[in-house]
Length: 354
Image 1 (cartoon, rainbow, N blue to C red):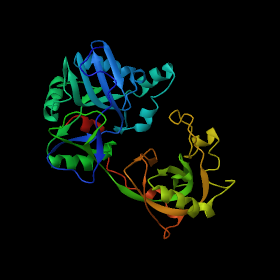
Image 2 (tube, one colour):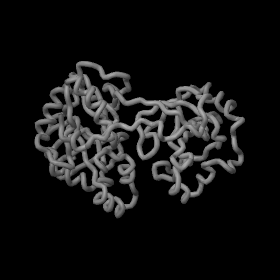
Image 3 (tube, rainbow, N blue to C red):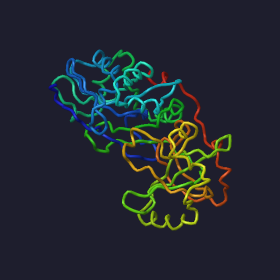
Image 4 (cartoon, rainbow, N blue to C red):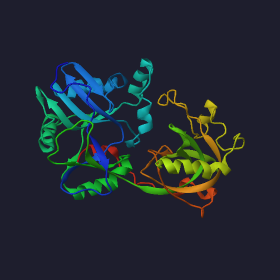
């Protein structure tokens, strides 16, 4: 492989802002695996956000990219999986499997798509120092009429359209909107774009915590919601605390510690089979590897309010943000019914463009 921009390349990133800034190019924020594709003739390499290759996990995409991308190019985009008319991140994570036979089976059962949104090189020319408007025009030209499973990400410079996308596209499983300055050069691993994500709040039960990697201070609080059957389901964590606050939380939560955790709703978390019956912390995963998943059980008596962006499979898709304690709420009142459900929107309508 001999391209003007060689792998590995870390993608350009975005920093969070509260509102959609004016005067930029806007795209939907995809909820998948960020991927930079290098194609040189028959050779195709799919690189992850960290630079590690994803190629072996998506054989169906390798074939499609070889057929549908220009002969020699480097393209930035997102690998996604659609299920039931919306993005499905859980099914996407299942594709990262060590067994080749399993990878092939899942490639047929849950085929992936590649959504292209930037062009880093074409032929013998690097486009890293080319303004975004020119890179976008070149991308639209080379992907005109491209067929699934390769897609050209919709883009607009109309901020009102972007606001409409922000409201509607969440129903298809998208994260929000990305705003890019029109003269932006491509700078790998630099946060020069802007992301605007949905933020909601929920009252949740604090039922445990994990220690921080730096020592015996709180690393994250384990959060739960009651389902319709009255079972407390683990829905995620909140973790954004100062070092001093982490120390204070250990002392503050000490009266609630259950040691041993007999009678705790998640006491069976070490039993692999129990994770098939309920959502518990410490679920075995190839992502966790040898990471210590142990935690300190607390009597599920305290309620806090957290901010979150969206739900995925009955849990918070990303780490929630602690807002405040809610002594006025009972744990039993913290159920799934309080959560706001976005209006459904067909993913194919998003991919068809503005």
